[in-house]
Image (tube, rainbow, N blue to C red):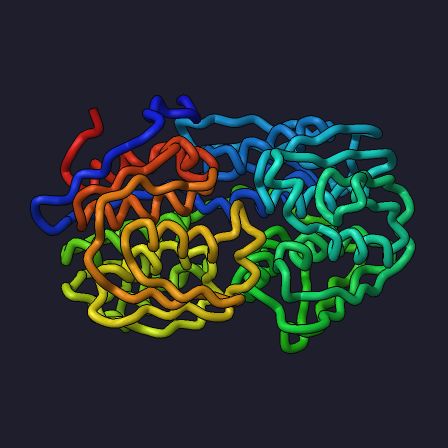
Length: 436
């Protein structure tokens, strides 16, 4: 099963001839896969992860765990990963870990290797060297860990020398990335005195922290919080190996829900139900406000689109990975679409606020850019080649718009390998077409 598809340098998206009407099955959640990989590696015994995601982000995590001396078997066709946990031990005394442009891998491993006995270096692609990690390094330093940004930029590459954890209480910012907090929480049970984290400022992307706490509980560790301001993980606990089912990726599902909205059709995403713990499942509530019908079931969610869509104003802090998805629908609305409180997405795979604004303007639309979001004014869409900035979400979002309007060409479509390698095949299948 190949990770890299044979996509051309540029891919023209053909508009649909009729509204989409389909049921879809999607790959496993990236966020759940990488959390489960870390916790299974820290668990006592062998865990089997079913429905695990096969993508660049998950495979750099697997490769890094192996370099740390933790055995991981991958069966891509079966969507299964088998992790032989070491009960909190990091076997390798030295390792150089390459994380690509995976934020979860970089942040989670930076905290995890603090449990090890030696010296570890974590690095990635050029864009990763621009993505901040200093708040996490400072938090680890408060715990007595020798953790530094090698270039002094507050970004990777970072070097950690393990074996020095002494503290139990950390004060840190919560307004740049929730991944820093998740990374600390996951190592909490193995700290000699447990862990207490006191946040300064607003916590962004709260559902991702809730997800972390939920997966920790699934692997047998208790953690608690007080109003998402103070978090406590008692020490002396050990993650327990288990068989773990990973549900489909709700962020990936947003493109197919948006496809229903864009074409005035119907899409039902299977095995992603109303009880999902992924925050991005709430993207459908925005589509509902835009006039779509949403049907929630225990094991599926259906969106039925309407055209034209209504313009809305939305605080998307909690579901910020779906900002490009909503922005790509904005040209199809009959009023402005305003997105606020997502300043932290400027530090993602690209500055997503600036990138989305630039590409919408390339399509001939008027856009106001703010520090924390943007306002998009609908209008006629002119043909254009959409730059993706090596950002998978830019490619997938604007591909959805291309299904509704002519002339959209995606530059570097292969960047979807980061989280969804066969996205374009699944998109064509949902449209009842096959990609030639």
